Image (cartoon, rainbow, N blue to C red; front, side, top):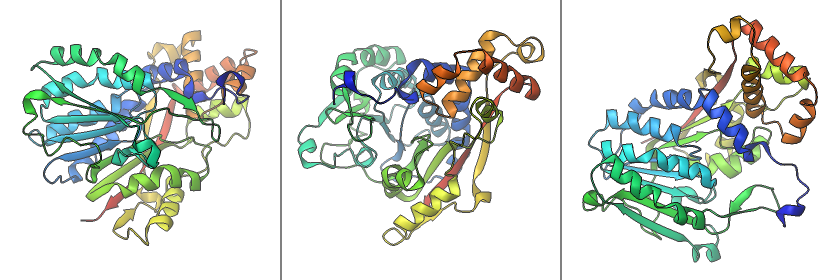
Length: 377
């Protein structure tokens, strides 16, 4: 389908401006890193490496945070980190955070891919024809310092531009890869020790000790779709003893109050964790009986993150910049399409609604939930 004639509205999660404003003004990435970090004490890796899969690296903040925490717990254990990301800009942002990781934890292998959820954990396209077109690049970084690694990673921009081209799916409207691509990075001076860790083309990695699925789907999709296309293939990829942590928004927060002041009755979050886990168990329990699911809502973990504001910005006159940042965060979390946002911003009611909520609560925060799938040993 020709993008210039595509009648579908521009989707919220393709808007870089909204995304970047959200991640720089709100603390969700750091809160997610802390939530995952609380579970790392239960991971017991086995040779040859601790394997982690990030099902949507975003700007790389969560990946970098978890890797720092993993280094603190397992300073001498080799790491294999596989990250799925379709956005070229997010791949670049993720790569920007890696030089320090290679410097502090030399026995690290990082793999980035643009493949689908059903393919990415195994680094192998599901389609026979696509398997013949895989762009597989292996980069052995020279040197010993983060600065040296940074210079070499910066030189990969053309490789990224070629490998991360996307087209619009005529079926779903989502961006999908033109060519399946895999980028493998490691330190050349540790190549010998990492020989059994570095993935090879045609040889899928072993199961994962940790799978991170943070906001991996659109909120309004039905439970069946979220499970079949995202959570099911990820849960299948767990190693024995592995843990999959899924994180999603709940709407049980002041952010949703802003949304309902403009769109009364709006309900974007209709698939709570226990519902998704029940659907996942129904699909997997016959063939994968060793999985355990946090079905009980009491086993779900709720945590919150806030909009970054100075205290005087919410106790005195709330400035326009604070209102705009809060409004952006609210519509981003609620995943409101650009067309509806533009209509709502045709007058000043949205700013008044935002200021009212911030003033009543003394700030703005959002509540996420996390839930687990664990594969028994």
